[in-house]
Length: 213
Image (cartoon, rainbow, N blue to C red; front, side, top):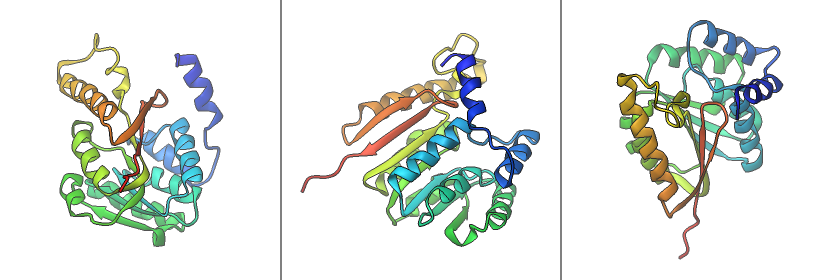
C-alpha cells in the first residue's frame, strides 16, 4: 500500500479510549514497539474466525497483542514469552487491569530457551520478537502447532528495508538478509500454506497442513 492508503486504513482502526488506548499512548511515549492498529484488527479478526482455545505468543512486550487476542475470544488462553523482565512486569500489570490475568501464562525468559521445553499444542501462534531469530522461532513453533493451526509472524518486511535495501544501514543488513531468507523459507515449505500481507510492518500467515494417516 502507498503511504496515503496506510494512513487512511490506520485511522479507521485507531482505539479511541480505554485501557488499550492507554497502553498505546504509553508505548508511543516510551518507544516500545507494539502492533499497528490495522494489524491489531487483523489479529482480532483471525481469532474470532479461528476461535483458538490455546494461543502461544512469542514477544509479549507490555501485553497489548495478548489483550487483543484474549478479548476477541472469551474461551482463549494465552501462553506468552517475554525476555525483557521490566516489560514482562508491565504486561502483568496490564493483564490485571484488563481482568485477564487468569487466562494468561506469562513466561519470563529467552524464547530460544523456552520454546524447546514446550510440549502442549496450540491452535494459534503469534511471533513478534527478535527479527534475527525468526527461523528458529518458526521451526519450534511449528512443532507445537496443531494441524490446521495458524502461525502469524509480524514485522517480516522490517520497516520496508526487506523490499528496498538502497538506504539500509550496514548494521541492519544482516537482519534484512535473514528476513528475506525467512520469507523464502516459509513460502517454500510443503507442510504449510503461507501468504504475505503488506499491512503494518508486513505479516506472514501460515496454515499447517493436516497430516494424512
